[in-house]
Image (cartoon, rainbow, N blue to C red; front, side, top):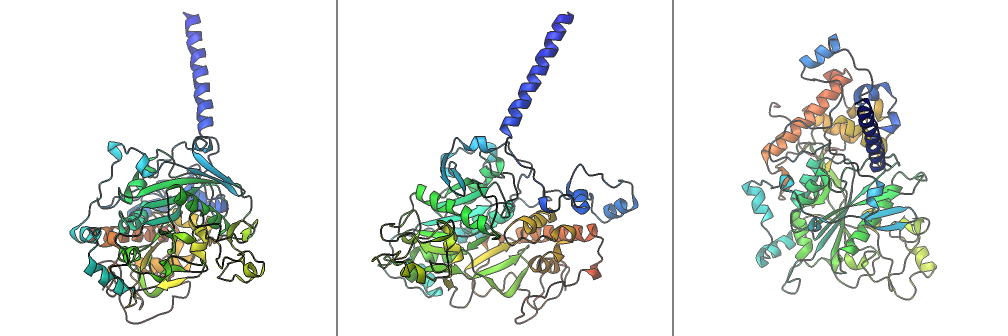
Length: 546
């Protein structure tokens, strides 16, 4: 009997050892999801590190916070309960998805890193429990039921944007290919963007990297088979091929360029577009995950006689930039006169991996001459003087094909409607917690290293604007959601319940941050100068505001 027990114990020990080895193999290469820039700061550790000693739950301060509705002294990534219209993310779904699992995928290795290409939404089976069924109200559904080409409606649409439409323009719509990247954007902002373009795109190419812009390591959020990926691949509609492809960098330095990783990572979009059969008469659109052209304008790009999309381009600078209305942290926080200029659109014949390389000869670029943006004089900022001087274009009279980063970064024609309405939307800083805001401003493009030890409204002027809106501060530049001239606002937020839910959640983030840093209302004054003002006073905020 003792011998039998000894054998069982030995078998158990061996089994546990095997399990540990397998676990370590599967998780090899994974990195800790910590804010490296200030992870040892007491404020960070007390707030975000589960190993850091907590304040006593019976302390006066803890009781005070609980009495004011704050039940913990650290942040939770999971958002509070929302309406059924919202699509909350599973933040606890981080599968053991590491580089050894990437090796089974088709890949392209370049000097700066490797792209791994995963199955698209048309190549996977969605389990019954994970099927997403969108719920639209009548107004939203009417805006989405626009597939048929109605000649009279299209003429009116083209006229809105100073374009022409005639019987020779198009008998079918141009195909649209989207290229973007993903990191810590909330699932809500992805749903806001995807609702606007539901079933419009042929391809949505999304690149996820294993590092942030400043090369801080990060975990995959959308690993193959994860709940997050299954959700994401359904949001853009069943007619759209959605892929999340993976980028593993070789970079060890950004060479002082905060956005180098951004520029290089977007090369994966070109590769995916080519894999999915993009043609010269298709349209490439490049943006971030939190920005989109409006649906009405995208429909115009598909059927109107758009000068930038006429064939036979030199590919010197014929791109379109959006006139983008900015929503700061909430659909109720919009300011007049604040317009940005992404996303961007370019004809397929000028896109690298799609256009004719024999007549559009390569130019020099900023990283090792072959990657990142065009060098100054070789296409950067539309300056091709050195490209011409060096004879790189030969006798073709043409200019080089564009990477996705060129489409985003080079100047173009700013598109707005006849009455000045926006042609796009930017859902800026729509995060689910203050932790995510700190992480962004410490590690991503335009990073700001001092954000770990101060409240969110003191980190950046953009966040400050959203915070003052959440507090209901009077400001002459607020724009009511229903006021944007003749153009409809974002489809996802043409639902009062969704607008209110997001605004309440944003207010709760601001309030929790105020209490955590022990600031009074009177101490939450403007830190940065408010943006330039323009016409009348419109108050936006909670229903209690007067």
